[in-house]
Length: 221
Image (cartoon, rainbow, N blue to C red; front, side):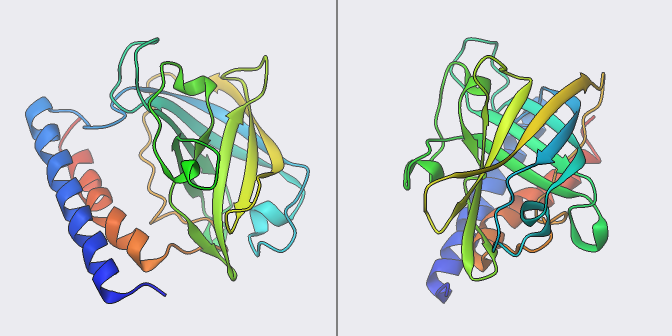
């Protein structure tokens, strides 16, 4: 259970983050993070379901239409140091069969490293996790994507990590045709994966920045 001081601290940190990102956006007149990216049609094939997660998407075999946006946090040129971003929208995987959004960033894969951002020169070739946990039933859930060997930027393995345990692959994301000019906005707090809920401290940390992003999206084009 999250303590009141911890939640207050997360809320304060979220406010500072939102303020910083807002200042950058007003100065540059563009999104402060992941301003440039490529959006693609994609398909998620779940062929090794993770039984017991309580998450329909992960518990049943199936094929799901998706959107994938590949980006670099600071929009640096290829070969420069940066943090990768992999935004995934899965059709019919959210509440009421609506879409669900998942955001992945470059991290390590160990019990500690999976929660820490990692700067790398080739982020699309490295593992990326959802970084912050969500509740799935009585478990803490984290997700991982990493490119398959020899299929960089084309096929990514999706894996599940429950309660800090080893990763269990559940399926493959096949990245298809690029959607020229498309720049969808992803929000995992609004479009939650059905069967999951964020801890209160995660919501407190993320909500100010996402609320600001929605406002800026109406002003910055």
